Length: 480
Image 1 (cartoon, rainbow, N blue to C red):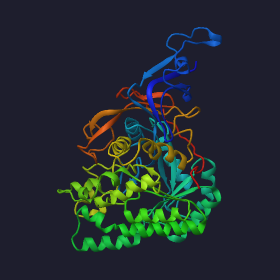
Image 2: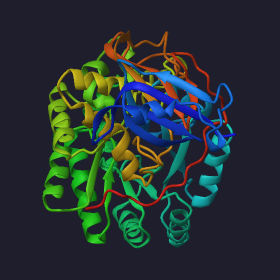
Image 3: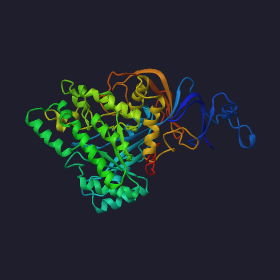
Image 4: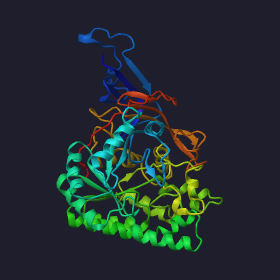
């Protein structure tokens, strides 16, 4: 028997439209939209069965969204569940992390499988499939971190693109761990130019940063705030410029992850003005937090150690401007949580040993809605940067990222008037602190459907691990 749901009376907001409409969902997909109160909308809930016979009672559910927004489920294109880093592991599993994502209105994550040096891409991808399969509350896909570029790796890139892993992350930072030199980067970019893959770049000059780290520690500058001081904005900008020019030489598109600084935004803007297929992502921590947090006393600043690092507050204006002008296209979280107790504390006395990463998968949609209220972005731009563009950028649109006939019924009923205080006491991420502790925001997720099935129902978790399925992706749909 088919399953049917009608969402009635809400304001449907997508990247392109806002309309008071009822939404009909059948068998996990959006079947139709009709303006609220019209005969077409009323027909959604009319009794009907085969050849006009009355359908059995309880044919489906009706969700009243009056006074609420009906928005696409969020697509978080940058998460790290269970990532090994600095002798420990990110504290969210695929089970806890995707459940928290659902609480925050995100219904698709794209996580990063890791190639270990000396091993193949396939081995790393298989390991991540094993971590995720049967454990996720919402749907998921994978990018591939390429740590060891060689002839076999390049061949494997072609095979992964064919099976729906269409993006590859490289690092200009972390020498000895994930680092790729310019030659390795160029070879991978040349391959992606041929196979349609998208190179994602962590753009920081890791060789220079390691020198500055060593010098700072020798001076006795060991606290968390020095993490931000040695990872200089100019070294992010220099690496961003270099990545852009290598991509230009290779004839390949480029996506720069977690852009944090005015100078790096300027490099992206210049490249886009030249007509290059260069894209940028930023994250809520760079929009709402700053070096003031890194400088918090009693080692509290360790909670905010991530790379690229938090910047002085004056960089935020450039990031917001980039989001408005589309020189930055996506807001993802780079969700990579480590508990303060026992994990962040590994770096007491040496900031270079603090695991890099912040929790945030549950907070992104709410923080960006607050940005709408604060006048930084429009309501439709909120949906564009958090849902539609990440889906297009990574080959998931219109299956994900919008509310349209044929799309997966990943739908959030969002209360734009509810007030909440973000806190570790009430969040659902498996981490012992919140990066946004005590922050008051207006707007809150009320109900979440993933492929038509309720995961959050009026602020209660009604999902299950294993509902979320692996979702292969096509190549980038956002190229100029």
